[in-house]
Image (cartoon, rainbow, N blue to C red; front, top):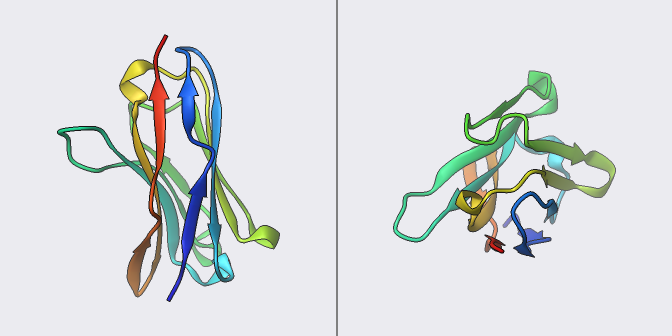
Length: 117
């Protein structure tokens, strides 16, 4: 059973930055793709950013709402996925989840991000 553990969430003022981390319990080379999703209260879970596996060239894609502000990256040696979030806005407030796909999808427990003054 793959374990994904997110960290790095918290309270930040508008315009601020946070970096989320997702540590996997095994090599991330084996995943077809990895990504970050978020779910705000009363809303459906949505894709924020994703990166394809090594075999697929590591292509990234982003939700339109975060393009130019968020950056997804992976550190293979540490089996860790990151999400650098800059220029944060109140509408970015949500629980952020890490996802990894290998035949089936795996989810982390989520980390709360709150953007408020």
